[in-house]
Image (tube, rainbow, N blue to C red; front, side, top):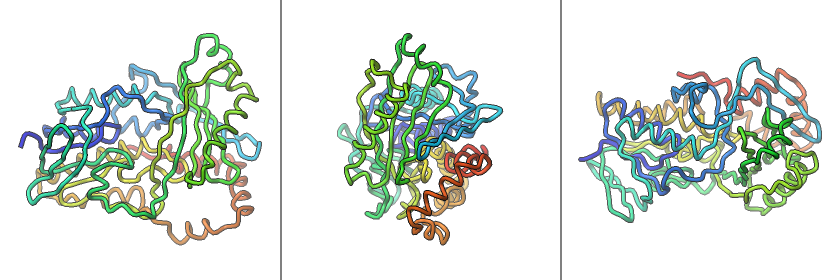
Length: 374
């Protein structure tokens, strides 16, 4: 066979897996429906742990990157500011970041092909066949990294109808020099706005001379997302963070699965799922770049161990579960979910009102800032 591994999806998880495989001497093929650089609307929240997993020094990264030592959370009209002594997160542009990672994989030896949409995945006795409109490819192993609708996940991941999908809409706008000067007081730190019903949050995320505004919520099928989006924009206009004469870019939507219930099958004899394809976005925050990168590295390590020592790929799934849980609410989580709304809101006020709790519960755990690189 021409390739050892087929990676379906060229985002951070897929490109990381391909990069690590190529560096180790394997022959990965990356297939993506898009042609990079492609527009990818995303708040672009990257933690130091994710950059460490990518072996990227933020001071040497050649594209847009903004370090943050402050973040503000707002709930029920009360603002809570958290500060760190050193950068606790970074803002990047996904269209730049993803292309950079994919080009690095290609430079390391990965065969990267854009504009090839995968239509089906079939496991045979001795190989996996991946079909596209332009032809088919075979390899001993396939890595699914194509987002929550990944064709590998659909074919092999045992997707359940009980999965909880989060829907989001975002706008990313480049600022003129005049608007950048006007918004300078607001461009040093991201702001998060917790929805009153606790079903999601909105954000205002500056990145150099860009600003990203968005909102996400669970159960978006109820049609409430446009109303929530307009309420956020109106509030940002009123407080000056979006000047009246600033025409923001059109909002674009996306969806992802949180690892809360109905977990997908993460791996099998000839496949692994990484990132959003595995449903690894962090519960409550939706932060997915860190888990995508980490799972991409783990998948590459598992595949190399499989080729070199015959280790079953099931070991990958066990490691993901160890890091991110089984994807099912435990006893405590089940009871928290049953709390009356008034009690839940009181608990949120208590956590946000405590600097220690806010740092450990919200930022370290929910947004993954405490996760150590391994």
